[in-house]
Length: 563
Ligand code: ATP
Ligand code: MG
Image (cartoon, rainbow, N blue to C red; front, side, top):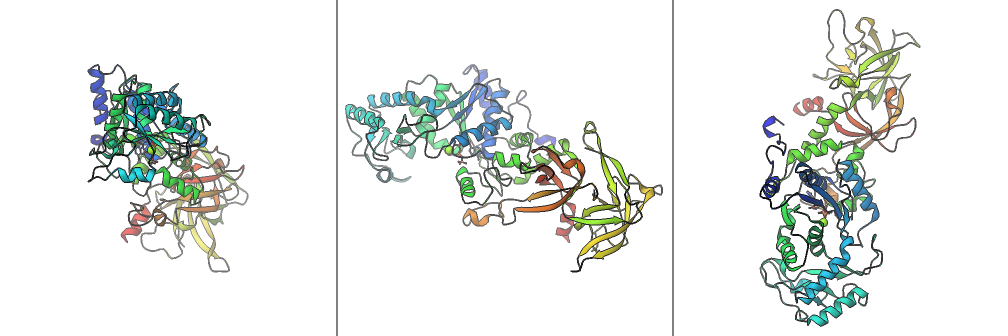
């Protein structure tokens, strides 16, 4: 990304239409301060789309000196769980945001919402309907046809009050009655055709227990919760645009303590990715992944386990910005941000994923030398470490070819290569296993090339990473690729059919330089020439497990593609 595309900080100029609005509202004195909220429904783990919304809501509040609330929209007890409430808090914190004391639940407002429903009934603006869900749908009409009034629409206020009170007292079965706003069954906006405000649900709620058997709908609870909390700018995705007249109708007709305003922005869509809690839950329930935090999942817990830094996620949110136009963002743009941050922050290490043994025949048996290697050429403060070198080493199996094609510059019979930070070696002999595969290479080293250069200035075309066999530890490396094979999964068939069958490859016999043996889960490193990796929580003492976060750009793959 060049400078021209880099968004400017908000202190100078607002960078998107929402920040323009907030800035203008503060300048005009319409609001003394900005208050936003992030309102997840605790019915699954948060995904990368939610991260965009979190960065926007918390970001705007922070930039304009306001505050952002975390509010659980916990109005549907049949789908909501404490596990989700906990994970959502962990994810928001991990992204680097803090709601301070402003943690709320829509369920905190159940009493007030109920009282306000009575207000609407008394004003003749809500009624109890006995139609079934199917009948309500049928009566609702379509985009081209108006709806029809329910036969119960003209019930007297007293009867509505009586029925609604009895609904709340638990007299009726699930689905037998609802409370509806009395607006306009002929409205061009289907959301205004007497929307349901309350439904009967005899269900245990994670927070209110069995206190309630009627629960408010999202549309009823959301705007009123905003008003109770003094939210000034209620930012949501475009699918709620058609709900805005209802949001405003409710605010207009209830004695709410403040007047929040809803603004919509385009949701994030990412190539090769599905951002829908419902579908992600299906992947988990059907065992297609190892859980919500499987490193292939586009959940925040998944990308965290995969090794994405929170900073990269925030940078990505800033880079894509917010707009009202729907768009599809390249997954590669997210990876770009991840590489940017990791290149700067992660230490370099050597690891051999598919080991091939190399014996340096002219190197003394039992001798071990330590080479000082820079931990991060991008960050001198990261210092150096000692890497042991010995007569037996491992190199990457695909760094050797017995009959190399043109443009393959790595090790081959008779060829000299540089071992990173160590010596030049030349391959003299290929030892084969009984099945004809390459079992071992016998090489000689040039003692005059210590540290990676020679007095005569010759320079081999390839530099390989390596690990001392005597000092290596063995570990597991999990290679991850896109979860879906298509950039637009599910476009032509069921989403599950577009799953990438090769999204995970597990290598169990990897050889790692000694400093990789005992790292804390979550530690991120670059394996030289291979990519960025993150220590997984499945690691055991003496047997680390690494997840591949993202590859480095692979020039050989490009050359092959061109060939
Ligand atoms: P899903 O469709 O994945 O279930 P949701 O919208 O039902 O998501 P909520 O918990 O209701 O999930 O969402 C909380 C907030 O996150 C809402 O304000 C919603 O607009 C926002 N959000 C959800 N998905 C995206 C997305 N892809 N891009 C941006 N914001 C999103
Ligand atoms: Mg939702």
